[in-house]
Image (cartoon, rainbow, N blue to C red; front, side, top):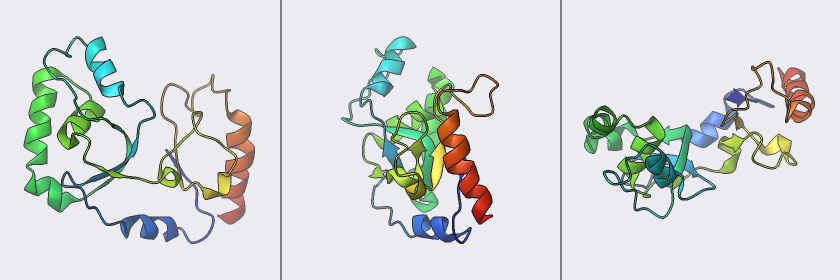
Length: 160
């Protein structure tokens, strides 16, 4: 995940931290583009008969805003840790099962998926998330090299 600051370094986080977390689960996240991804993973791991995800939406766990108060009230650690220990599932599956689709939506600006989202409005994005196998720190990173190099790093250097 890369953070790009064009003005004051704390500006974007102040805006994000003002977000009211209304969901009972205490999580704000960006919805996945594939609403079936959790069940797809459970099928792949042959866990679908044991853990069926019934919510109509799911989220990407790369960038989250959490209400620690609500997480504590919901006994989050014990509930999710027991799922992980029993079934060996990853964090994104465990978090989605915990929320069951009741999370609040995080604006795209705070979880911009490099390589999947549109790069047109570069200045709008505050947190760039390199989700999936393509990472700029890998030697073979090429698909979006030009966009990242010229649009983001030059802007980053200009304002820092």
